[in-house]
Image 1: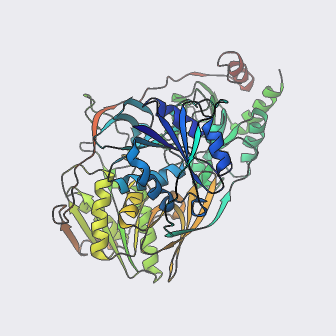
Image 2: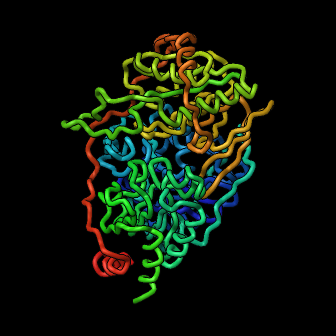
Image 3: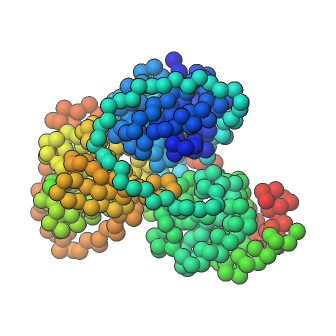
Length: 312
Length: 249
């Protein structure tokens, strides 16, 4: 029996979270199959075949898989699920949309956003915005899982390639049609993959003021994020949001600027290696988790920080 | 168009819960309970469709203990027409809730089922997608915009990196994200009116649904706690610390 990992990709290239999902899968067994579903995605399959630990790549290439809609992809995974003990996908929006649909087709539970594996049937996941870590044992024959990428290292990509095997496509379901996608274009690294993340909160005061963070981010090679308060205030788009209902990040360095530290924000960043908080309110809860804090007016501190980074 | 909106009774979002001392579960005895905030957004969306003349009826549905009636009364006060409670003291996991919701959606011949993208207690983010699978219909999860016309729905979805727009045939399941709308404050006269709206009670047995849990909670524990660090005087000291002590820049 083998373990099936569903690749998170954009037809052209693998998304980094796939590599973390492979590491999680490797804790469950040694026969690791990786499924690439999409249209014209042979290049992704070739890339996937070189991930260390992958023993076989399954490639399902069809026009109706182009957007990886759950209605089209779930029946395919359900069809091949029987050969596997575990089905894993990264807990991005694609995996979160897809895996519950797969689980329901198989009449099994789905286990969301696992952060640790205790045994082949027992998994740890955060509940209540990360205030509680719950260890769940599954009695189902197939375990359908989404993986929190930040909780597992990325698997290495080598030179040795596993075989790529084509899989017959399922018939088009045709329930849902893709219309369009508007993606935020940015030169900066992607939030969940960045080594440094600089986030702003309500204290930023306006969307224009985020340019201060962007300048600093460019200086540090960082991604820019935001708290839910900043998103709700309309300063930045929702895909900037770090937190329980947004993205979960765990960079080497997280800089929280003008963020008070609501529980739901902390749920998305508290596993960062080093946390820096800049806030004028000395009592702000963010200081309870920050390794380094500066109490001060962010509009004074940010230019000074930029200057200090330029020196030395 | 008939809409079903599913609402869950959860620990109020302002309350910080803790594991029980023996790690057997989460301590939620005698804490304030409220409607899951994402479900509130779903109710608001449903009621707006009714007010716009695009929906004929909005039926609020909840599954769980008898006190879920309070949650349903809130949905009725927001503007749902009637309510349905599948009452049970059993632990309900997302697959069981999806099966119950499927049974209700079929019984009511619903055209659209709206529900929050996740509940803020278990943070699963599963029920809507599971329900769509069981109904064999389309799903639009994480909705931030919803337009209804005669042939179906156009939904904008919050995805990693941006927004995706999809077109769905009816029946369909839509799960709501934060930016879809801002739920209304309920006025007292509406609370009074809601008390008179019909609320039907059913059991999982009557719906012939097996709700036995598939996952067993073995342990609930505190997450590793971060130590508060130090305050530094200024930006120059911060950069020095990040460079020489933490070695992250």
